[in-house]
Structures are given as structure tokens and as C-alpha cells.
Image (cartoon, rainbow, N blue to C red; front, side, top):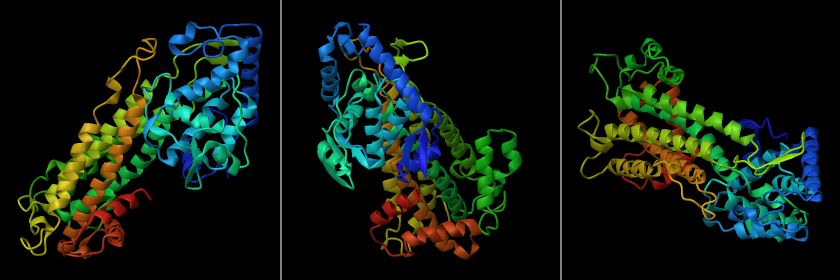
Length: 492
């Protein structure tokens, strides 16, 4: 299948298929027409001697410096080279691929003024698996993701580095492997390639896709813990949640009832105790609130994925070129901070359930789920690891969007730090995956003591999947690799 881009209708499913499934992309005929119209406006403006930011002027504080026509191409080349100053560990190759896709879709809207040849180069890199190596640090998230996108643009002109079939090679060689030649950028094109929010949005998109899967895994892992601790089902009854009718809370309660249908381990109110601790009783309220965050983030991603985030924007219907601020990443910065906070809470409540599973003062199971308490430590230290991860998440969840440091001699005096927010949200999600894997391991061990034949059919399926990765054993052993493998399995 081929995903057709027009700049307006890219869906999350299509993005996932292109980024993770390596589907190819092409532009619609209308998108090519829009591209041509905006390019003609740029060329006509230059012919008429108009002063246009970033086309016939310098950038940032240099916006008052007029550039003569013979240097317009050199201006764009200098822009890409000077702005490619990202540092730190490179983004995952999937992020680079997402950046190519999102930038192509933004340009396809026809407000950027690039040539057909430049768009074709961008699409060819995406379709042939030429993924620029993009350092993950260095973006302020306003004026766009200048440093990350400059590293992306370098490869189009045969510079920088790119991943090709799992190997890193220089940009020129990478293009050659794919049968491509470097292009030369003309007026406006360098700026059109790097003025945008595609780094923060690419990371945010991948974070969201993982977060959705993780939310489902949090529910079924919590259900297994409910059985391990003989939790009370009354708290999940439909009428409880209909009187506080958050749709997401109602949905999680329904999922818990469905997951635990047929269990011979869960209990009724008053059978063993009157109430459960909050980490069990409030699963719908907490997990449901995280799903509210996910809905908010999805809404913002769909807008940003299909937005024109350039400056200046070219409006071909009336031939105007307008300097604005669509490159400012504040909407994504807030959304990504919110995503990090929401996912961190899934980890926080999971760690509290882990504590209830291993702490003999909080349950009637063997201490730390050990088969020989004292001689064998059991799963005692798994809770330590979970506690460490959720503590780290509390630091990562500090909102990046509340910070701003002026740049370009105070011309760019307020920035979003949106790319930092996206990176932190993604890191939080990786930590939560491991916490949930730890809970799953502890819950499975506890259910071994309870009797797995008493599990509900759906939680029994989850138990068996856990056991495919973490074989049943009551002996002390290192579980590090199995935690990582189970955490990875949760994304499958």
C-alpha cells in the first residue's frame, strides 16, 4: 500500500504504517499543484525585489540585513550548515523516519514555497530508507526544531550522516546507495525545510503510539494483580462509575469487569475485607484519567501532523508572503508535558500495587513471594527497581514548557522547549513499561501461590504470555533480561 499525502489528512494509522511498517508515500495531484503555485509566488517576489524574511534577508536578529540576489542560494546553504549543531545521542531511526514523513506532509500543504525537485528528494529518502542521523539535543522548540531539522536537511544536499539498512554512512554515500544525487537548495528552501515542529511531533507521535498500547497493558496487569491480592469487584460495578460519568473511567471499569469475568480469586465486599487500598479500588479513576490525557494528546497530534509550521508562509491565492509564528511549539510542549505526567501516574500506581504484592504486612502471601523466606529473597528487589524508575519519572515529569530562554539576541524571546518535553515523555514511557513488566512478574508469581487454575480466562491468557518470557521458577535468579524482554513484549 502507498499512503498519499496532501498535508491535511494524515492519520495516526497511516503514520504508523509508514514509520513502523515502512509503507511508501506519494503526494496527491492537488498537493503537487499547490506546491507549484506557492513556488511561483516566491520566484515572482524575488523578481519584483520584495523584502521577504529568510528569502532576501538574514535570519533571526539578522532579519534586517538585506541579501543581494546573487547570494540567495548561498544564504540557504549557510543556513543549513550553521544550524546543524545538534548534540547528544542521535534519535532512534524511527524518529528520523517520522521526521521525514511529517516534514513532507507539512510541505505538501503548499504554503512553503519549495520546488518540486526538493520535495521529490525528501520523498525519495523516505521511500528508499535513507534516514538522517539527527542528534536529539539542541532544539528550543520555537523558530521550529531548527537544529534537528537542519541535520535532516544536510542529507538531502549530500552532507551529514544517514542510516542506510542499519549502517551509518555520510550523506553523499547514502544518497548514492539509493541511486540519488545531492540537490542544491534555492531561495526559501533551506528555511522551508527547517522551520517546523517535526522533531518534537515525531517523538511525540511515537511516544503516543507506545502509550496507547501501554495503557491497555496496564489494565490487564492490574487485573492479574487484583486476582493475586483477592481484590474486591464491587468497586468496578457499572453504577459506581455512571454517577461520575467520565467516559474513560467508565471504560476502564468495564474492561476490569471483562478481564476478571469468571475469576475464582476476586472477592465481594465484606467477604475478606470491606474495602481495598486505593491502588486497587481506584484503578478506573487513575487509569481512566490517563486515558483522558491520551485523548487530549491525540487531538493535538492530529492537528500538528497536518499543520503548516513554516515562517514565512506563502499564500498563493493572493500572492502574499506573511511572517508569523506557526513554528512555535507551545501546543505540542503542553501536550507532551501532559503525556509525561499522565503516563508517570500509571507507573506510580503500578509501583504501589507491586509493594502490596511483595510486602507481607499488606497481604497473606509468602514474604516477598519467596519460596524459602530468608534463604531466598524472592522478588524483594524488584520493588526497589520499580521505585527507582518511578522516582526518576517524577523528575522527568517536571514540565519543560514552563521554561523559556531568549535566543538570537532577544529577537526570539520566548520559546517552548517542546522537544525536551517530547523526549522526556518518551523516556517516562520506557520507564513505565519496565514498571508494568515488574508488576506482571510479581502478579504472576503471586498467582502461582493462589492457583492459576482459579484465574479468569482472559487473565489466564495474560499469565501464559508472561510465562513465555519469564518461566515459572521459585528460585532466586537475575530477572533483568526478562524484565526488559517482557517490557518490550508489551509494545508488540
